[in-house]
Length: 197
Image (tube, rainbow, N blue to C red; front, side, top):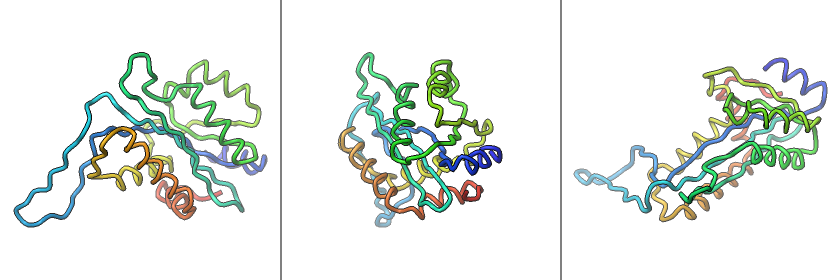
């Protein structure tokens, strides 16, 4: 990762961390308050097979405020519908990030098969403004986006969304709030143990 930082400094590029996650209608359980003797019960609406997929980028650059960029994708359980982000979706996300950041990108991400495929390698080589480095295997703690997903899911714990559309609306609302709090993005980086550029 040190070489990626040197390349970013030399090119004046943004250092971007990327990752993906998913949320289902079944809420994460955490501790909560209730009257003594009354166990809180969270009823879950909807059936299985519906999922909200998220892909996000946290971008850092010296003398700029950090940026959070994300995309969402609904899977309603229909036949032939993509269940998650594929190579084309990642390429679109990277193109959108380039447009928003107005500069070259040094991307750090994990070894997901969609990140290593021949199609993805071709899409990366077609973008000269993009340099890609892999994070070490089995080291999710080094990726600040993992901390962003953790924060999002903690904020949605014990929340029983009525439908997949409600879940999408709530997740977008929470992610939009994160975008307007740059100190959170620095916190995600600090939690991963990495120094800002």
